[in-house]
Each structure stands twice: as C-alpha cells, then as structure tokens.
Length: 224
Image: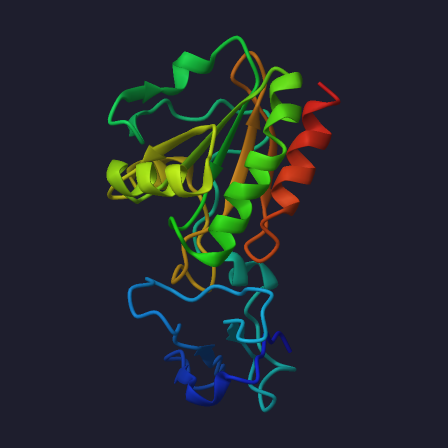
C-alpha cells in the first residue's frame, strides 16, 4: 500500500480506474487557495498531500508496476545522451537557447509551477546554494509552463539569481520526456546535469523532496 495521508483529507475525492479487477483510488486534497493548479505538500500542520492507495481487496493481485506511480511517460533523455535543443524566453522576455551554455556544466531543472510550496522551496534552495554552483562553474536553469511575467514576479519575490525559462504548452517538457506523477495528473519535478559537452551526466526525479535535487546535483558537479 502506498499512501500519503493528512488529517485534513476529509474532503478528499476518489477516482477509480476503469479496470474492475484493479481498483486504484486516488485521493487528492483540494488546496486552500483556489488558484493553485494542483496541491503540494508542505511542512506545516495544514500541509496538503496527494495520496495514492491500492485497494486492500486487490492489492495482492494488482499487476500495475511501481514505476507507474511516477507517470506514464517514459523519459527520452537519459544519462549519456544529448537532450533536444531548445530556445525559450526567460523572465525578462529574452530568448535563451540551450546551446548558450555549451562549454560549461549546466543544471536544467523542470518544476511544476511558480509559487507552489514545493517549487518555491526548491527554487530557494537553488538560490541559497547558488555560490556553490558558480564555484563549480555551472549554470542553473529552471523550466516550467508559466509565462515570462509569472517567472519575473517569482524571481523578484524570492531574489532568484538564476534563469527561469517559460515552456508554455510544455513543448520542451514533452520533447525531453519528463515523466509526470500520479498517472500524468501532476507535472514531474526532474533535474538534469549536463557536462561541458552537453552530455547528460545525471537525471534525478523526486517530487516531494525538492531540496534533494540540490544535494544530488552538487554532489555530481563536484565529481566532474
């Protein structure tokens, strides 16, 4: 049984897959702020969680592989490969291409959305360790589906010193094959580290421990 629970899940809703033999209800607690596109966990007592639980009646015979819980999309970009090139607009509306970073390591991290608890925590963790990334000679680039104006407000509010790119329509996310969570209902949180030649040396996915992305990327960069 896989379950993320919270005392405030009394208002949870249930979704059952169409297969009558394998019932997998998904419980999603609605966030207190109606303008959030999806709930995120946070450390406060009013934390919002997404729970996914196998029905006890069929759990022993369920054939759904555990990897399905990380989304139905198989990542196209893997360690040792060169990811698809992109050109997107940053928080200032300027176009930025992946090729701009060739010749130096670059950390490209995809996150669900500006101003959500987990994404804010992750962005601030990158900010707080930014000098360590600079010391390693690496650039940090965040990508989400938010527009440039949203990125600008987000970067200004939290004093983010790195580039945020707008992937409206999630075209680049799809081209890179970033897997979604909970059967694709939640945009994935995935980080890639590219070396000086543009080859991927690390792919790290962790939706609910955003700070771990910083730890893992720094560990890899220090070994290059």
